[in-house]
Length: 472
Image (cartoon, rainbow, N blue to C red; front, side, top):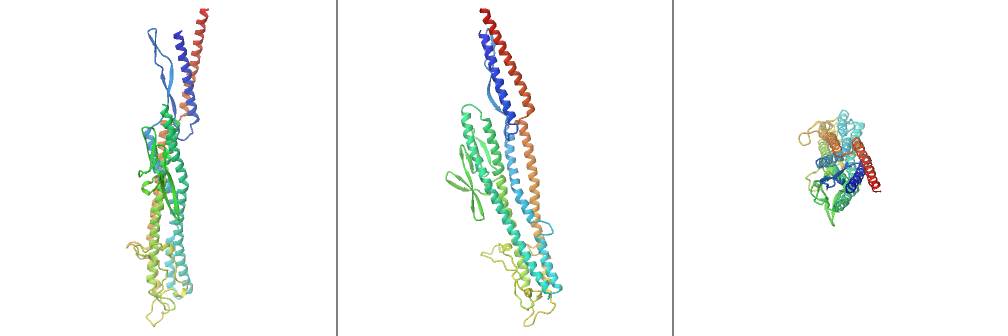
């Protein structure tokens, strides 16, 4: 009876193992479209053999573990490439907006600069004409308004970036908190000798998302807990403790701070990566640089036109008037062009005060038809006046080309990062993803095993009944 009992036990374990394997396959099939899910499979181990009649007979089979298909290298590469993808993705919309503002169409700032100086050229043909003088003032006002519009548009882009950061902070904090909770769950489960496959899948996916958003770095300690830190080393998750990121707004300024254990630390650009780095870099580096160049352009136009205009005289023979309101300079005047684009405006309100003529020597009056000053101002458009190398239009052209190059480079880099992500994801799916064809083959295999185990048990049952009947 010992042999038949052993055979009965072997059949029972085989039946249970095939059933459990089918259940695991069913879970794989049901999660075929679940993001981040890794294929699972049963690890089968035979029971120790037993000496029976001089022979070692097997005692059946058992499921010793449920293995999770996982490749550390591919997972780390996915996380690393997510940082680059997030960075380029974060810069994409702001750069598109900047490219729209600094466009190369016929209706841009350079066009208004040319039209302004062309109006002076037209005035030189009829220096006493009131219509031409009105057009000069109107063109000056339109030029100023263009500078104001671009400045306001840049402020809008900055505000949009701030709004985007604020909207993303809650999602980031939710993922940080969830990883800390998963650390607790994984530690508790694996302390009992089991493997928390689903929790590890979810944690890896959240880590990839955080890498895309913040450029985080992760590592797993001996207890199976994932530690997460910002690129500069500031911790986000330590064991089961999760930190909190907050967006603190003070007027137009928005700062990111990390709250940990009652201590608040500011998160600078060197502690950011991924999408947040892209957004903050555009806001704090690219836009201020464009603002500075725009101010410099407005300041140089204002100074150049005023310098010549003050040497000329209007129809009333009065000289010394500024055409544009000078930009106020606050000490120390290290950068006198600050806020020049925002402050630029025409100082004249009376077209008779437009200095088309050179100032006469008192007590003389302006000679009829004197157009020398208007010609001098018209000639400023082609004169190299900025940094010793640029005219007004070429200086603006360099600004637009810089923005255009950045936007095009972003498109290329974003496409490259996206392609790399797709390739790595395909590699990951090939190694750890669920293939329905493979699962169907495994399902048939274990189905046949289950049927064979059932048939085996039925045979053993008949053998036992035969033995019982023999004794009767």
